[in-house]
Image 1: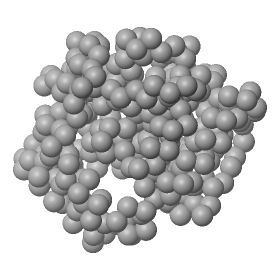
Image 2 (image 1 turned 90 degrees about the vertical axis):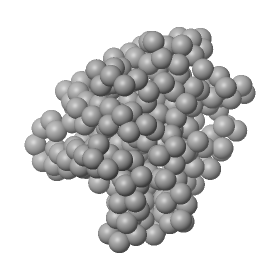
Image 3 (image 1 turned 180 degrees about the horizontal axis):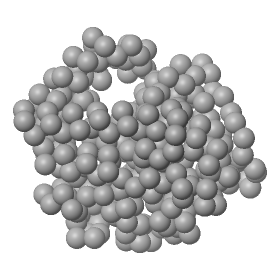
Length: 292
């Protein structure tokens, strides 16, 4: 099991040793490396792909102390992992929380990346007026409720309530490319891949993360801002595209949160089109639409 000792913890990682550009992808909250959907196999074929488990997740160390968790710390962990593996300027991206980590990395380590991929995510945190700030506030409130459930009733109860919500109230869940039963099974793995304390610590780190909306305009590398049209984060993606000078906004049609499961083929096209353009030195700025 490959691990690297970074910032006082052991980070589990998986690096495909194939020629070509290096792409680093960071997973979403409570979704360590084994939770990536099958579309990830296509990226393994095309790129030298680095996946890893974020602090508090899966096979990476989950310290008990809340003070050891923050988005800047997660970004520093990624920088340390790249140092340990001798990787200098990869393409860096992530989905959902992984996109938040990637945005933090881009702001804190601007010279360490070739390009940035922000997928189904947000670079802000309640900053500014309008709909994006409202979305951020709703996210924070949801995380607080989830933390309370875990602290009072445990991880299994959180998984049970999430499944009930998915089946009874999520208007988009049945439209996912992943069957409902598989969504339930993947969600249930949270009990096995995160400790209650690790879950709460990561959750608090996400909801208390720095507001990057005043820093994203300084991102100088080419950036992909990709999001499903039904994703609550879509207004945030539009805002982040407007703030990042060298960005492409890729709207994925017929997709809610996590286009890797709703529209995996379109997610793959958006990512590969962007990376091909970056590698060829083409201007990536503008907007693109990906529809089934």
